[in-house]
Length: 63
Image (cartoon, rainbow, N blue to C red):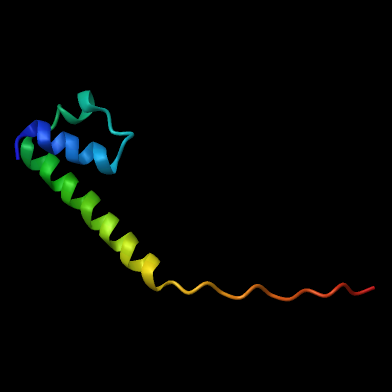
């Protein structure tokens, strides 16, 4: 991937990342950050798949 493709990939996963800021880094650093974002996205999807919602507690009014 070239630098522009790396920046575009990063921006797809982190829309707050500014292209001018990302352009300051070399290709290797951008590739490492993109892999980090992809791994974080993958972990979030895996966790969301197995998390069981807990039943709501039943409250009673006591006077």
